[in-house]
Image 1: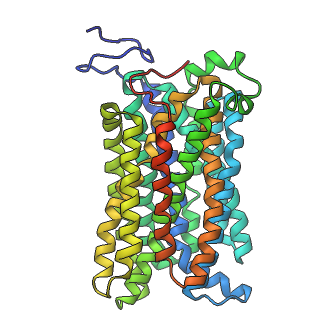
Image 2: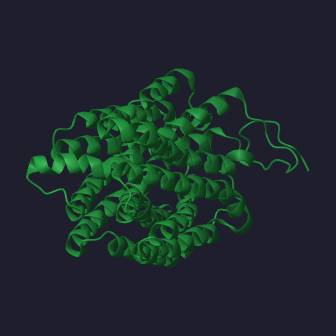
Image 3: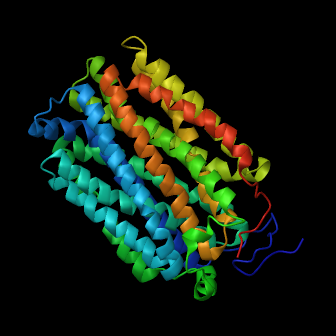
Length: 437
């Protein structure tokens, strides 16, 4: 079998020898990976500091900081953040017109600055504004990082690159948990948000040390002037709709399951008799466990996808999410004191494994669209799901306030994955295909 020697070739390399990565591909990957890692850190910092931040800010608005109100207003703030993510579809056409590299750096810079500014919030409304703008940056980073790696890595390494890239987001959970364990518990939630300024350094490194992808350089001069219009034209309309629906399912699961995990752990730990600092430490351990499961799931996903195909792999991960959300929030959360917390944490590991379904979109989405509209398609599909997720969070907030618990409302979100299993067959299978030019 012939072995590829030219980087970026669309042919398949010999299984015995992979196309070597050049320095630019390595540097570019790590720039995208660290951006995605800090993206995960930024997103999860809020989940970790939700309870202490709202305990301080809600009374300033004349609202009692009881668990039901924290759950309700926390859901509203999650929804505001998701709306910001939804607005991030604007980055796609920008990247298709002006390039992947600088646009990627811009997304990182935006979410870093406004995460840091959240530390100075004096009321919940200021916090909501800062989280909305940070969400615009966070949402764009995934689409741009996924597009950049897909286009810059050689074909025989691209699939594994998608899995490797996605681990960065969940390593960010580790970093957030570690910061919470060492800084948050001692210095409070404001200092945690200040830690979110760290990505500014990565943004400047990307702008100065990473080159544009060759695929974009070959295509941008003749690229489509209206990429958002084209993704809804034949032959891409169907896949745009299917991917948007599947990402909606995935995002509902992420924000309903994983993001509510720290609050659930803190509540269970307090019921078990732990002091608040010890409960916060326990939430950090639980987040680390969730992250380990997700990282393992991300590393395994490309190999599974190459073996059984994109659709069956996503169906497997959706099924894991369906079962683990029900097990964690519908069953373990309501076990007797002394049993609930350890069983819930076991369920979290599998919730983490299922959460690796996001790596499938980094692998699969770029294969469905050509270079001149790829970033726009990626950004749009991920953004529309976030807007829908925001609506679900408003409903969840009302349900939490009405029921006085986060367990049952979150458990109901497992239904989304059952619906997702019915949608997956409409996705176009791309196993064995090369990345379109």
